[in-house]
Structures are given as structure tokens and as C-alpha cells.
Length: 446
Image (cartoon, rainbow, N blue to C red):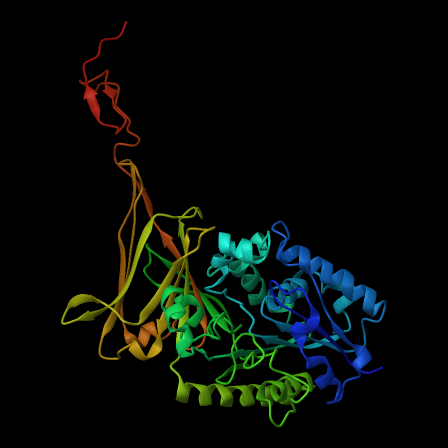
């Protein structure tokens, strides 16, 4: 029996033509067609969550594999399929199913590991009209920039026994191309999210890279505390491809005429699937790095910062103002490096900033300033500002990667919120108002 390959598509797909000729090209290059399986699942029902689809994936794999969880197999995902498969690996690829480490290579094509700028637009009335009803609310929530799902699933992947110890070898391939013919110039102005530099027109290169770092920054210590990181997973940003479409889509452009010689994406997919040793894996990493370097000679690189604002008790802080700027001639100035920000529409304490690397100037120090307000005079958050030279800033801002940072703010009660009066206080008894201020003293008692 040859090694099997399972294909998993993305959001809103409703027919298997999304895979175009990928399965046939795999069959022409060492795999048996009857051992290549084209997956299909429903993503547009509002109540269906990623975890539901992952559980359904497990059931479908059991139907195909039966009791044979020893023969090696591989997975290729496109777009949202990455989230489904990552959830499956953590939650279901366990115990007897993972004991013999049958899943060898998983190739993420345009995987939105850290969200998509387009996702929250999928809730709109126009989207509902386009899809004739539900648009997959729960799936779109998971896909939104800075979603709680992305924090949770990537936290799980920081724990290497959830995937690495199981023998799973991931790869990230994503396009970095924006196709904007003159006929769409107006559309690009009114809907810039779909024509964003540093993306494949749906997913940012930085969000499509599973390599990432997580930190904690506390108001008390004002020090960046490392929490964890994923490193050394092969990543390739490919200048030839967009997210989808027959002409430039990283998967959709693989047609009957495609060969490993004339289609870079197909060639790299095959290289990843044929990895069998650690040496092979390092070779795939080098090959993808080389392609990324080629792309960066043509197009600028970006980074993504995902912030989660919490108080010291772990409760979300949702009313805040965020600034990242440069210190120029001892004065704080706005920085061109921040090209887009997004406050998550479901979890409002989650905030994402998109950073253009070339605008980070080595001669300046940079600052992060956070102000949060409470609609009460009785509690408040202290203003949080930290300034650092560019050398420290680049410790957590990495080109083509996302960095997640928990910002821990100090929620302080006012001195009027709780007060004790000694028994011999000459002002006793007292009455106080809603602000905790004594508005009358010397009250008599019976």
C-alpha cells in the first residue's frame, strides 16, 4: 500500500473543483490516485465550529483508515483547512491513533494560523446575500484577526507533545502577491482589505507562518517575559501566488498542464511530501527560506502583533487606546511602521497591529503607550508606557511572523472605595455618596 494523502479545503467551499488537478498531479509524481482522498465539509452553517469539523474529520479518517493507523499518510490543507487540521491533531490525533506516528507531513497552503483581515467582513449582509443565508459565523469568528481561537490553538501548539512528539512535520506555503488590474482600482480603494500589501489578498504572510513567539508584558515589571515560541518550521512566502483563483491561486492554479518544472507551488508541495528524515526536513526548510528571500527582494516584509489586554486577575480589558510610535528629537511621534490595526469584534480585549518592517528606523527608540479607562471614579488603570531602542523592539518583531503579547494592566481602586473609621473618630457617624466621599458627618445615633 502506498502512502495516502488527504486534502482539506477552506471556508465557503462547496465543490471539489477547488482542488483543481492537485490530486492527479500527485498521482503523476509518486502517489496512487486511489490513495488520494479529496475532503469535503460544511463551513457555512452558523452554529458549526472548528472543533465540530475537527471531530468530523476524525470520524471521516477512521472510515478511510479503519484500523490501519500504522501506514504513513500525509495531509495538504488550504486556508481554513489549516485550523481544522491543527485542532484535530491536538484533540483527536492522540492515544492509539498517534501511537505509531502515521501522520508524517502536513502542508499548510495559505493557512490563516493567526487570522485573516477579511474574516469579519464575512458577517455582513452582502456576504449573507452572496451565500444565500448563513456564512459560518463560528468559523469566521475563529478566522478573525486576534481571535480567542487563534490564541487557544496556538497556545496548544506551543506544547510540543501535542504535535512534534507525535512525529508531525508541518510546512507553511503562502503567496505574497496582490493582483490589482486597473479595472479594480476603485474597488481596491473602497475595500483595501482585499488588496493588502504583504498578503495573498486574503491571508497575510506573517499570519500564515506557524513560527511565532509569545510574551507577557506587565505594568508592574515593565519587562517582556518570554512565554514560548515555535521555531524552525519550514516557511515559504511565494511571490507568484495569491490565495485562490485559476490564474495565480497557490492551489487552484495547479491544472492538468502543471508540472513540477513549470509550477513552483506544485514542486514545493512534492518536496515537502517526500520528506522522510530530519535531514530532508532541514533541506525543505532551506528550500522554502530561499524562495522567501527571493520574494523579499521584490516585495517588502511585514510582521503582525497580536495583543491581549488583561488585568492582574485575568479579566479582559476592553476599553483601551493603543499607540506605537518613535521618539524623534526627544518627542513622541506617530510611526509609519503601523499600517493597519484591528480590534476583534467578538473578543474586544484582543487587538492586532500590522507592521511594515522597512519603516522601523534603527536611529530611533520606539514606544508603546496604552491607556485604559473605566466608567467610574472608584477604579482606574494606570497609564502604561514603555520605551526601548530598536534593538530591543526587534527581539519581538520578526519579519513574516506573528508575535502574541499579553498586556497585563494594573486595576487600582481609589482611596475612597473602601475606608475604615476608628471608633473614636470625632466625625462619626458619617454618610457617603456614590463616589465614596463623605458628604455629611456628625450624624447622631439612637
